[in-house]
Length: 472
Image (cartoon, rainbow, N blue to C red; front, side):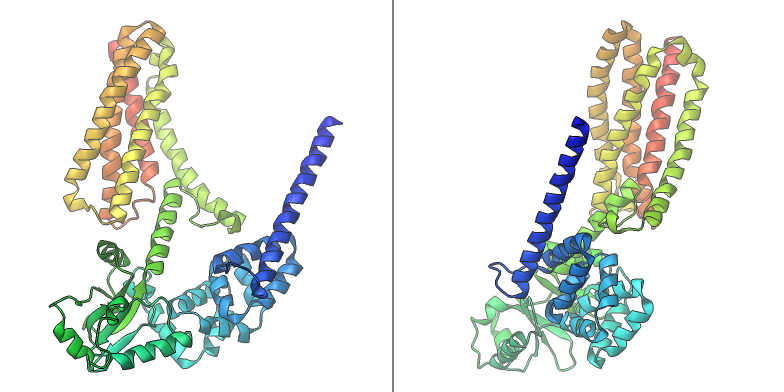
């Protein structure tokens, strides 16, 4: 009876909590729609509240979805997981979705259409055909680039002016386009020649210092040489290079040009931030050998299970290799039972040391700080750290083992084995991701499995081999 009462109590508490979440989501959405909320909700907040509604009340979710204005609908849709975006394209009329796409900046519009295409290719085609020609051309231009190229991340909306244009004319155009909602997050004026080749990039904060009646050519001529020389991203260069440039020069946005210098668009810091976050998330999932989705709860059970099973199968074969090493010394273990007790310690310490080296190396590769050809310093550093830690913990564990089992030579065996394993862990924890990168394989994928095989094999073989040689 007590267990039943506790169960009923937990169920009531859970229902109350769910009702509170539902009511809070409804209240905040109503406040946003009626424009009575003190603090404006971000698209991510709105998507989260809609997700709460969908979880508890599908009908209510559909009602609030229809109430969203096209001005915010596109931004919210980008933040939605696939199963909610599917509801959007199934429940809302095409005209409203098309209007929402047109309200987005070009890079976001291309991204949303790509998401929709992954769910329903025919629906994506219908929506694309409904856009005006200018929007279609911008989206096609962005989508013509490969996924990892700078052009795929650019937006075509920017503040630019001809070099012989008066500053006041350019500023008036900026004011007009800001009022019409055509430009957002403007931080620079890009100055071009008659052909559209980028010449200069002037921060907005500097514009107020100039004579508005002068032309931009006159203003630049009076400025320090190269003061407004632009840092640019070539449209087909890797996005990782662009990220490095933006970080090195602490930029709010960077111009995107083609190989001849023609201004094509810009990449803003929010796009850089999104790329870094997605890359970090992908690497975390790859290192763990799981499906690389930001929210696994939204991934189909079969798909997620299959993705994990592949790595588990690989891990099974590597575990068999380690087990076969142990099998070679079955008589040694049978003669000296203490070895079975201490054996996991050697493998565990090696595994952790290798993972530390692996994580640091993968991160430095991602940031472009090291490459295979100049990785000697990184290798020396990680091996040195592993050896220092190896000496420290080998000495500590040797004393513990000698006292624990009252066998001094057992302490020597485990200490020597731990030192050997930590050396190889640091070495291969650095070498494996560097080698994978060398062969254009994502270093985050498979590194952990290969490293585990090395540390387990070396750890077991060195420990049991030394034990057979010294103790028996």
